[in-house]
Length: 193
Image (cartoon, rainbow, N blue to C red; front, side):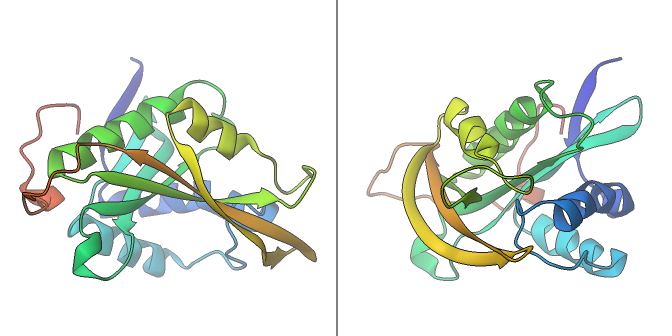
């Protein structure tokens, strides 16, 4: 059957939360300490889908990964920029699913008229440990992102200080005659989602 990329629905919240819970409890990939409630996670999905894509990769009916975009900054001048998020089930990593999913997210964003994609990534201060590696940085580099900046020792989790990097990818040409961003629900979709 293969991997299918599709738009997330509110019914997917439990499956997505199960993927995310591992990263909250066992890693410093997210700086969130507590796993959000199912209700809160549904709310996050609903808010995102009002304007931006929220996609899932599934195989044989099982969600293996999800990716979404959100507001980069709450000022009008930033309308053409987003922050991206991607999480892959811990058992489905290193199988190419994340690359396909992020590429689909970027395609949807470009279709909306988004020009800049940013990824906020937790990183070890010096050496990798059992909670955090440089894998996400390497993944984003492979996907065409480049380092934009570093916040040093800005997050503490599991009693350790971690840094954060911002990586960026340009999805379109920066012209002076800007077209308003198309909300994701209004986007004419021809692909899998």
